[in-house]
Image (cartoon, rainbow, N blue to C red):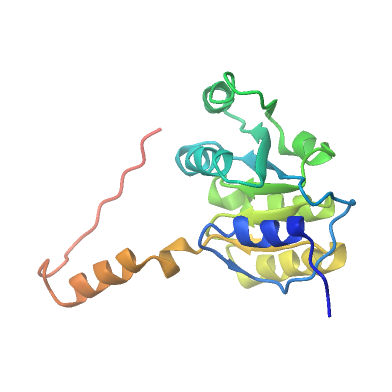
Length: 194
């Protein structure tokens, strides 16, 4: 029977935030861990979703936010300020490659623009980090297979955000639409403000 440490359990359950792990349990961390030690995470991509992750993970028991990364200095400065009044030191990075070199980071949360998800996940696995990556995890089957290759090769855990699949509000919304309560939908317009 495989024994799982507190830290391994917390990594696999906490990083989910409603997601579904794509790998089996029982991975071994790259360094020995004490029973009371928190999982140290770095968050990459600090726009709307990433900022929300900073707020959520900073309040999660057993997790310490130790690094933040965004190419946009405005986003980075805004999120770093959230930690100014705490006793927690947070390292700011503008380049994910430097964050991945940081031995104080155990796992990364990726909430960057979609086209970076697969490559950053691969880099993180190569650097010995476990990954929670926002949807879409990848753009095609080829990218997904490469991600699985590095996950297996480096013994990491990759988990994709799938909250929309597990949140009952979305099921209710779909049922509402299918029942015709909005009438005939003839067009949809989406806007993204920065």
